[in-house]
Image (cartoon, rainbow, N blue to C red; front, side, top):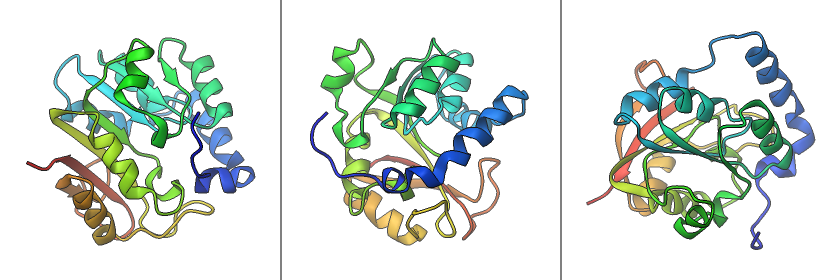
Amino acid sequence: MEDVPRTRWEEAREQHDGYQRHFGELIDAGEDIDGEARLADALAPRRARILDAGAGMGRVAAALAARGHRVAAVEKDPVLAADCRRRYPDVPVVQSDILSISAAVFDSAGLPTSYDVVTVVGNVMILLAEDTEREVLARLGSLLASDGRMLVGFHPRSGPANSRAYPFDDFRADAEASGLAVQHRFGSYQLDPPSDDYVVAVLHRRT
């Protein structure tokens, strides 16, 4: 893996141990945790190519694969990547920082080199390395098909440990500087009105 800065997640890794335990318990109990996947599925054509960036334990990727899509997961944290492979052996996982992925990386892994939908949910955007938001958005945008869309979700304030505050206007400016545009904004994955407490945004490539 090329030299890339440590993410905010990595800088406070020990403070995030509860994330894996919490979602592991929900998964094992059969709880409904597919809100992000349902919205991504609605955005996608049938049997779409979907990239789950910052996939964590793979719950969103697995839910989308179960809906008939061809899914690839990217996760940098080796513990979470291993958990994803254990729980969902049919979901291909590329262990990598988002800053290191490219069409060539996916091609070498036998995976699609462009995607109909890219998901960046679960507070990934507010746990990136400092000042890498535009580079991450541009890199993911370069993997979108011409009519593809990106689903992003994060807490703009009061996020998890060591996360940044990320007002929606700052996010939108970063997206536009990265060649993307906000097509829709909601306050939840159930399409509630826009909120200052949670941002769900659908992006597409600017023409």
